[in-house]
Picture 1 (cartoon, rainbow, N blue to C red):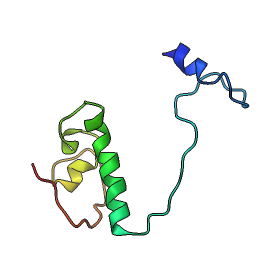
Picture 2 (cartoon, rainbow, N blue to C red):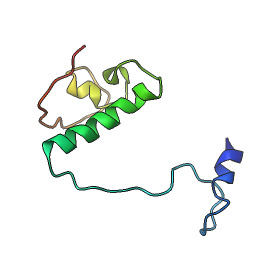
Picture 3 (tube, rainbow, N blue to C red):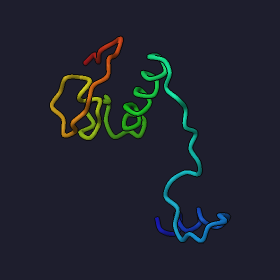
Length: 87
């Protein structure tokens, strides 16, 4: 893996040996309930898309567990949602 992370730095201007994260980010202001829910769904679905779990709330370190009213390792302030988990 180190070889892969090192190769990611070949074209960087900064003097950096290894690069783990993707270049750049695109911060967006969350201004509507719908947009907030889209972003929360995106975050919760990442372990599912990676094939780690079948349902977001099955991932032990996900706030999806809090939204599903399940026991969680994380202390999370649950935001108001217009829907609930099914499962």
